[in-house]
Length: 135
Image (cartoon, rainbow, N blue to C red; front, side, top):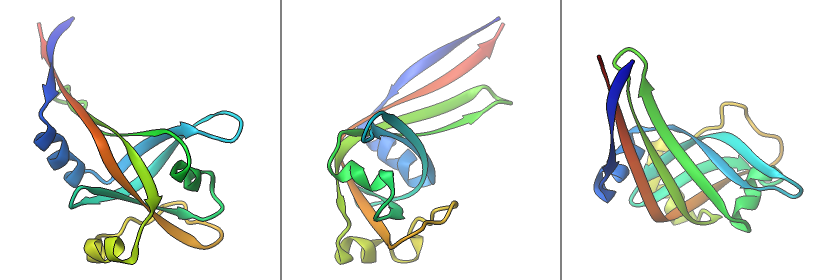
């Protein structure tokens, strides 16, 4: 058995952790059911950028409620963190895409159809860090 701690993270630490992460999950209301999909992302200047195709279900977050969760865990040391993002999504502008330079996210799965970048502007960032202490 182990004991541990859960610590709420400050807003700035959530932003810092989003910058080091590259993989997240996004949950949203699909056309007939809830969806949960893995995404590659990039974070800069307060914007999360994801890439998808214009005809993919993920592109519908522009019109729907969603939540994005990025995390990391270390099984060896039994530590981890999680950052949950709620916000608004829009098709990224050329200026937003240029801000990311060579750090644009790339879909591991590829995509059929025209690629689009979606810019997520967080309105809420919440995070937690967990640490386990073996007995």
